[in-house]
Structures are given as C-alpha cells and as structure tokens.
Image (cartoon, rainbow, N blue to C red; front, side, top):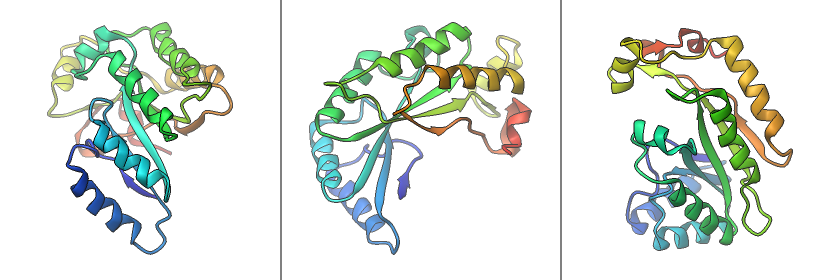
Length: 204
C-alpha cells in the first residue's frame, strides 16, 4: 500500500494528485493507496477523485482529528471545528470510502475522562449505520524547536509515563467496537529532537 502520510495529501489540484497516485500505483507490487489528510482539505473535486480511485483500487483515507474538545483544538491550532470533521466523515462514508481517524492521547489540559470521551465519540459516530473503519492512537510527544517544547519546558504540562499510557490505551480499546481496526497504539518522534517522554524513543 503506497502511504501518502506526512503533511496534507489532498492539498493540491486534482491533476497533480492524479499524477502522484498513478505513479505510486504503477510501482511493482503496489496494490492500493492510503491517503492522509485534513478534514478541511476535501473539496468536492477532491472527493470525486478519491471516489474514482476507490472504485478501481484499494483505498483508505485518514483524517487527523486529534481531539473532539474545542479548547484543546484551539490550543494546538488545529484550524477547524469539530463540525468540519463530521462533515468530512459523512461525505466520505456517503461516497463509500474507508475512513481511518488519528487521535492524540495526552494533549495538554485534557483529563483522562476527556480523552476517553473522544474515543467514545468516535465509537458512536456513524453514517447510515457505517462507523469509522479504523483508528490510530498517537502518544503525545514533545519535539525540540516547537512552541509545544517551550511550553513543556516552562512546566505548564507533563507527558505520560509508560505505565500510565499503557493503562489509557487499554481503556481506549475497551471502548471501541470490535469492527473498528486499531492501526496504531503509539507513535514516536525522531530521537535526535525528542524532548519528552524519553521512553517513547524505544518503540519496542
């Protein structure tokens, strides 16, 4: 599966995306596409393009939600309201597309219950009986050279310890219906610029 992961992979004209997607699919052994993007970067012409590829190859679309809480979304400068995510989800499912959602666990200011409420929301979200197809649980990590790094070093928030994170992931899994595929239970940043949590630098 050719994975268009980093950045926003629908932020281009359809002709540009078509060239990139076709090049990827032409590579020997490639059997499909995974396209990660933002919910606010799915205009009708791009949705039509994704629908076209979905009909001729294996395709899933990943949406970066991170949290349902608007105060956190403003803090991390996500740049769109929850209603924008909901609209994108419903339009993608109406077109018959597979949808994977990214969530960050441990965002500054969020309680454990608020984090679990994001998971509960995604577990219940549906379009004509169709749920999200998968989820990626991402551990918050702090990288050097970012605003978040400066805020972390000021002592404004802390990152999770390993045992704390493992318990949280377990609680998330318990809330998810069995037909939602868990694609990821963690994530890590480059060790050379990782400030915290340092344990996440050893993914094994």
